[in-house]
Image (cartoon, rainbow, N blue to C red; front, top):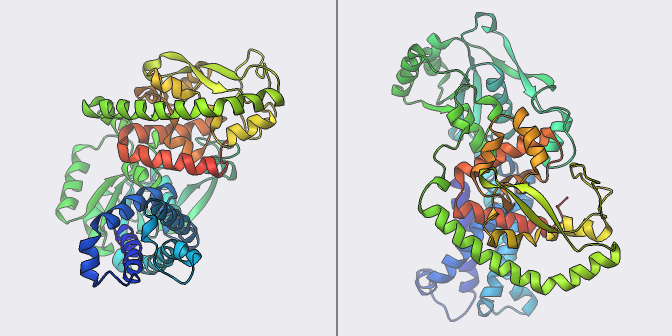
Length: 482
């Protein structure tokens, strides 16, 4: 809320100043009353574009070094698009060049100032949540490491509570990401083992400072405001009563998987334990009555526009593919869709003919089987454009989990819990996992992709779809495809 308020104040303040530079406008309140739709349009443009550039990701916004590039790109793009929609709004400055740059650069300057103020205020004790983690097992260590690395400066960890007598007073060893896993989470390379082998380090100054019976006294002594419930077994009657006593003290209690979702946009399938309902999207938006209709109408509109664009671009693309590597222009591959139903997904051919020779092989980064034109098509996601036809046929959606091949589904479903839950939604051309992690090429990457897919299924909405589509467009122009 603080970030959004500061950013909206910045972009609207810049527009207000631009309007004030026009001699025929008047006082501030008159500007606001005369041009409400201009301010509304600017806000409508800013919010999705800012999310597309991760300007509201706490892992980005907590450091000025990462927040500055995000808001700069978002601010400049918002200003340019706004001027394209409102060419008569440009102020009467000495040169047309200065007039064009006025709003993009002025809003960006205000945004950077606001982000600097945010980062400075973030580290003040007033904004800290003093958190105590209940459970010093794998789930507790994982969330502690996550809060330390990606908590955005919001959390101050005071320690752990655990009933194991052996752990009392001991420093907690935290699971840290291996170099390989970090590459997978960043969207490139292979991980050594996401669920198994890893390096181990000690979280500085974090110890097990009591058991469940000490919770009430620890809350008072350590001024705890948040309890993170990091236990994978069912809460028994005694612990439930203690937690209710803690609630009476005004403490927030949040389950580890829920907090993990909020911080990462992923569902921690390996940490839910007996609480399977935390990961399983039992009552997701797709089970309602209105959302499926709205989503299908949106898909039909987008697919129709996409096929129109595809019809105009196909002759050029087809000629480039054939001249680079004679053979078929289009390629159909069996994939698994909603409900486990199989269908043929269409693509522009990006590899040499007979690249797999009858055997399903993971596509990898800089795959040697890709042609020169194919590599460009894959980098820009243009090779997926024929799937607009799959969307129109109802086999796919514009946004959803990326469809997997049947051979990989059978293998991964046996090894990864909840993997088949991906089939609760139509697969998509664009996806939450795709824009956050990229294309997976291993079992380890499939685990992280599943975490993102489950998050999307649980939280799918028009807003999230819009953000994903904008992120996909940004990735295409930045050549971040495979």
